[in-house]
Length: 137
Image (cartoon, rainbow, N blue to C red; front, side):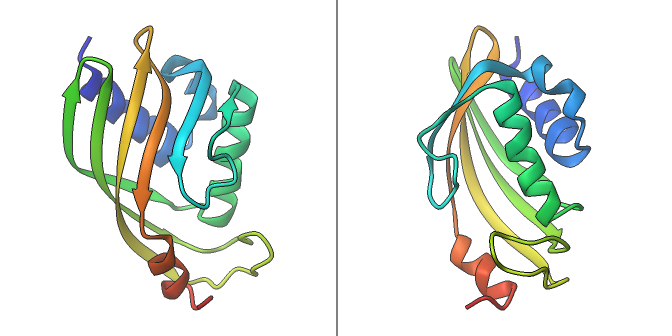
């Protein structure tokens, strides 16, 4: 199995195309968010329904969110990607009302694999830059 290709398909189908019905094809029944600072699900293990709830949370705030993978490194049980995230804030983020402003930010995610499925991630990106782009700070 080529995990990098699998991950690229996951990012396109789930995050860019928003195909909820394909979640089970890509993620393990227990998906752990090892590190993702300021993510409400950080440190938690998600079921399929929890994972879909997390997607809904993201897509409600940024319905046109799109990830462009800029690089990838594959090893036996992990694939690391760098990416550019773009989107327009058309829904509430927590207590913040929609700004209708666009964001453009970069980040790094290491996806963890188990049984040839994605079973978690470790992620770093500058959420403060996003908050500044939206005018919250």
